[in-house]
Length: 290
Ligand SMILES: C[S@@+](CC[C@H](N)C(=O)[O-])C[C@H]1O[C@@H](n2cnc3c(N)ncnc32)[C@H](O)[C@@H]1O
Image (cartoon, rainbow, N blue to C red):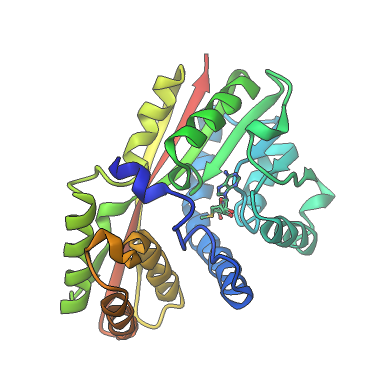
């Protein structure tokens, strides 16, 4: 129940900025920047897989929920052909532009289908790697199991499932502020978050194992953003989205007015150069189809 609320697509502003054109372009920008900050860690994880003899020479790789294509420069070194999927046409278009601008299409071929893995009707056993960064947490349980089933079916025996998702509980502002702690308390109150329960990151292992995959590598990292770091704005965006459910007055946790006033203060707090945000802690996993 708790998990479903956090991952419902309808009210997740992190996932999409809705129909407001200006907000949507802000969203694209945010996802693009966010991707760069995660890339160093994604790259390190792929290098580790490579050193384990995994992930080498993949012929076909599916990047599920590719967004604006932020991880494609890394993935392109591991695949001859990439199927980069996303549910949002704007992101698909941005991904295509990015691939061209980076010249990635000189060594790797790309398809950019709209939708998830399940809608692709991929031939069973035709894919070497299914990659998904910051995607599984956005799906409700039903969509997640459908997509996961499709991913596993599409993988070749020995093929790799690679995922990266966040552990929500680690959001932290140092030194903290009254508004930040207040939001956090409300979040805990609303979702009953304890320890690592809330995020998808800690659940990736069971997602793999429940679907018959053998986990071969696991890692985690924390991103800290420092004073005047543009990444702080992204953190704020993610923080807001994590709490998007709070906007809903019907849930009785805070009124829309309290939320918007809180956000104004929170923005000031996080842009204060004396503070750092630690967020999010990410889990990385790689699992092999037996
Ligand atoms: C946080 S972004 C991550 C983008 C990219 N993987 C990265 O790490 O930079 C999540 C992406 O998942 C996409 N998405 C959400 N639900 C989806 C679904 N059911 N099928 C395909 N893509 C989906 C969103 O449009 C968004 O671009």
